[in-house]
Image 1: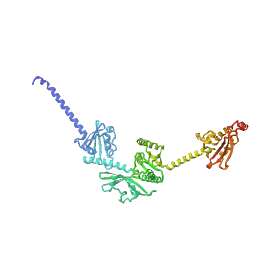
Image 2: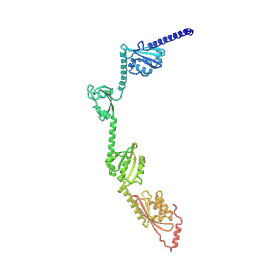
Image 3: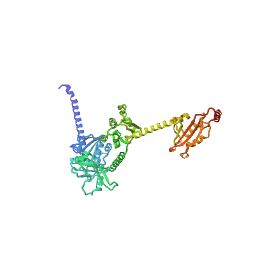
Image 4: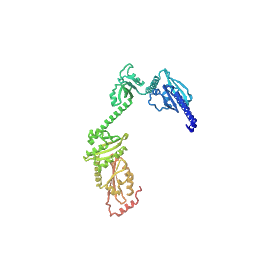
Length: 522
């Protein structure tokens, strides 16, 4: 061995000694930490918490919580899992760290479990013990936890405002809510095992909720319940809700619709109502009679477009100049109908005339009315023809004629009247009253006392009889008049004028001219 190795012996020995001491210290610390964590054998129901987190637990601790593998639990989750047994368990980790050590006893009746908490620096060691084996303690905590959750669920269901009950696979009731028991006792004896509702699980499973009627002492003598079902692990849960008000509303609606249908059936006007999706929802027999559309086609609820397509193909509507454009505007027409502004007059190839009206309907629907106006149009056309003939006939009369309506306005005049007075009242925007017409005549004639009489005659009744007289125009014409009462309060005045004055009697003519130098001031 050389001198260098001999000189380094003390350094090597010191390094080995330091390493041995450090290893011993680490081994002792690890032993202490393990002992402070789970005890000498690492068994039991023990949790280790740090910084509000559960950082470790024994296998039996996971059994007690029914979780495996290990979850990421915080202190709040841990508190929720044990507070139902140990109500004084601090809800805050730091509070628990300050109060440690803590020895808690269960607050449940008949439960002698204990929960001890010790602090080791920033960590908490929580141990659950009970006078039994550790595995039995873990299972018991799990059972108690399930019982606690089930009790909360049952209390919630007990407060449900509608009947609930549970049956096993054989149809026996295993649980009933207070509302169901109350309802059942109102109809059946408590000792009677007869089912309150004749339930068919297969129908409930396939068709969904079913309705059942129960007699009672109400005004209608019955109550209606809708029962639905759910199945879990062979158990069937039933839920009943009172739908009496809904059933009554549906009956009232059906009765109202039936009343409307009967009313519409008596109408001579065709009716077609389309809903907001523009599908036919209601029609009456008059629509079939007027349009010749089959009831089968209408019962299939055609769309608005299909309905008018059928009318066009069957020639029950006039052919538009551009049908594609017309059909494209059909929805716009229906929008106008919603505002109550849609109207068309159809002259059909078969000689009939239909008036189609669009009217608004609740909930965005549209109603179309089809009315046969052939007779009305024919009567109107005949009336117009008669008026034209009568006017032509009046124009052939040599006498000027003016007819006044019962309201005192000029109703009609002939051509001789227009020539005599150089005036046509039919061109006036406003009706010409009798007083205004008389004043106009007087301005074109010599002064005379006949004008007040004419006003009185035109305003008189049929009991006054005929009134006659004469006057002279500014041109020297002598005009005779005759006022004749007509039916319904109308009055007619005839003017018979003479154009043949004697030209040899100049003195008489000048006298006449001097006598009428100033017209009557109206």
